[in-house]
Image (cartoon, rainbow, N blue to C red):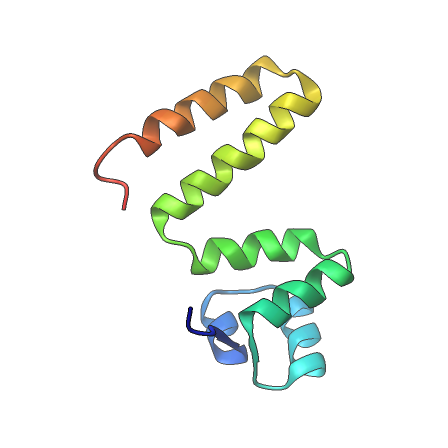
Length: 100
């Protein structure tokens, strides 16, 4: 798999938060490999930033898959009927051909 590069300019076009842009620029300057960026965000407990980053780079289908995964974990943790409905709906969406 080819190493993906995340650039400061790309994050600016995706309307990343000012705090995140400042953190990125101070730590890396203009660019960093995606794998290293995610590892560093994990090490600093910036999981919300990871979720935003994934939403920027995923395809629509991958976003739905990630949302279903997150909802399923929340539903399992909370036994929440609403979260279960969201998960079931997401699974139905994944079965539609138009999500690519």
